[in-house]
Image (cartoon, rainbow, N blue to C red; front, side, top):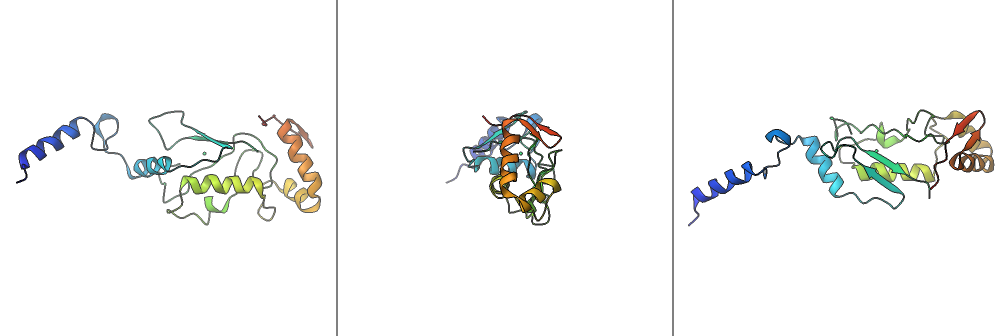
Length: 172
């Protein structure tokens, strides 16, 4: 026989101890918070990536660092906002850090995860796409003179000027 009253008391004890997926102040976690927690638990970062959470209580805002060899409230229905904080010489990343990646725009689907975005960004660094550029100058150099493009990338990563633009060193 199931002891109904003891089950009710156990549930009440769990709720008072915070065992009912509640956030600060006893509020229930939002769908976005539950989904981002699941995505983070399943996250399998490559060794060239690092993720930091400035506020441990706010998992929807994080910083992703991708070293050569980073969700809004609408998530997962809307893609997260991704910005590259380190200025890089890349056809698909402008000098303000805006990123042009198809899964962050027209190809976004709620089934995609943070892991998908990280691997998409990693692929973008390995295979720049000059056909859909934000940095038109870098795209043109990539299309017309790949060797010069590679030299410009190396110069920018080591810290230095590419044209009139100075890039801070970002290699470890």
